[in-house]
Length: 472
Image 1 (cartoon, rainbow, N blue to C red):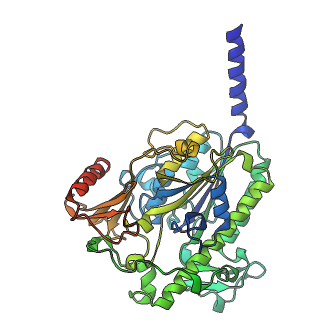
Image 2 (cartoon, one colour; image 1 turned 30 degrees about the vertical axis):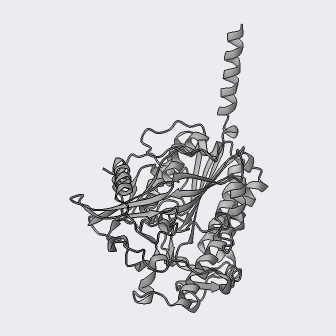
Image 3 (cartoon, rainbow, N blue to C red; image 1 turned 180 degrees about the vertical axis):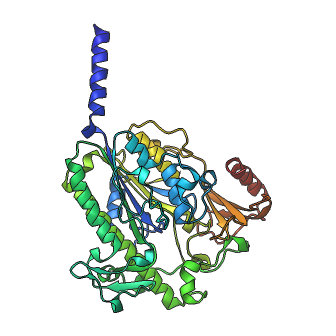
């Protein structure tokens, strides 16, 4: 009789969990080019109240890293759970289905297990090809995911496009227009509408919301520019290259500097660019706040897992670099927050090392779905239970040279971030020959201003052996 009762209890529990309305929803929020500089990360000069509030309700990962600091490889890696070398994707044009036509992506995995999956905004790379986004991943066609960043021009909600003389799109742009004049405001509008419709479905959902900011151009409604006082922005600490750093570690920063004739911006221009970047952050943050407020209004937060991350970091003049495509900390580091309905130790950040490709196995475990065998990341669930837990000894980032290449790269930089150091090797792509090494001791040099590889041969050798276990 006891065994019958136990079986009945197990069957009842299984039935309860398998009921569609009881399975956890997932709200997956992405930012573009957002570096680890937010209020919740200690940057009090950055106004990001809504992301900060999310960090207080969830777990902020202060040492999370991308797998390559440029959009397509990073997003393809994150969405498939595979490293760029495994995918064979290191450039912007290559569609992930060209390399891995049968791979199951993160949203596709949820779709295959009964979830309604919907994508709004930039989640995969904005490929300008016949295949736009990844149709296999979604239950309905993705929207606002395919465009050029330069197309993010102000739109008047009443009369369509603004007059031609007002649609010039410089690096920085401020106008007294509503939030919906730019992409991210419209993405938030669509996400709010989607949540209202998803609330009515008797089906768990995976909603991806990909914001286009703070990626260039740094344009945002004027009210977000007005939040900042240029005179109060802290100065950059390290405008010069690190001592003893090899030339191959750098790039021409064409994404930014081509507007300045290839030359470094003047101090005034640099302040204006930083002002624009922070205004774009605050604008994007406000849109996140609108989406989260709607989640609360609909009573969905209590059964929704929220994940927030950027595809990679960004330089604002540090080391003389702008934009991305390096292996330095500012490019490799990303903000990452995961908030669960019954969060252990909410608001306590963690210094545990994490990678973007860990999001796939983490969300899979949190939703109690089977984990695909192909994944190369690790679930961060133990860290969500205990912020002092650690699941990996290092996080790995890579980037080719030239930064934007055609055909095959000439060299590849493989970088490893441990708890106390960053070690990078540059190798000839065809022969594997070692070209240069970098070692930055974060215990005494968190800004990576001094390459001490030559001065510390024993430590360099130990780290090199560790790196080669990941990248032979």
